[in-house]
Length: 247
Image (cartoon, rainbow, N blue to C red; front, top):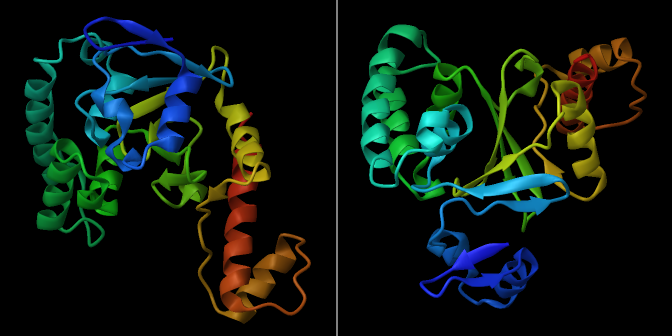
């Protein structure tokens, strides 16, 4: 249940969803106007918890740091600014190579730390955030039924790193039910795909000949197929097999 406004009127999550579906301004995101910080909504045994202030860094800290989660709303912006500065400093020493251009990486970190609009975030900034906090991120959109992974190539994910589930606008996080483990992650993703969700699977590199050879090694039957389609199919199979190995 949620309490909204000064009169603390109690409404259900279903009523919130119904309002969103009818609201012509639903892109404004009703969750951003909720006054009470700890809205805790059960959804298929998972819980959605609003994060304020919104943003990828705020969501990661909310998921990872109990002190941040329990801190005051007035104190969180100060923490975010401090963390943003520390992340930029850490990036300069920990993120090396052509994949991490110094200026773009720093700008990306600032965006995911301070900007509320998803259009301001960059993949580089999100990947730097995940890399520096040693975590893996799943961005979900309930309305569009989409799942995106950060880092994008989940074939390089590790079962030893925590996975945080973040709403696509970074205004809320999903908290898994008690007992949820990495061994259940692949099944959970598969269930979402079976229910019509669009999953951004990795794409395998290589020529058509190379991809067909790899498909044969994976015991995949491909027949006549375009290179791009085969690259997507192989990437998905390799990701699914990785998840299945997490026991």
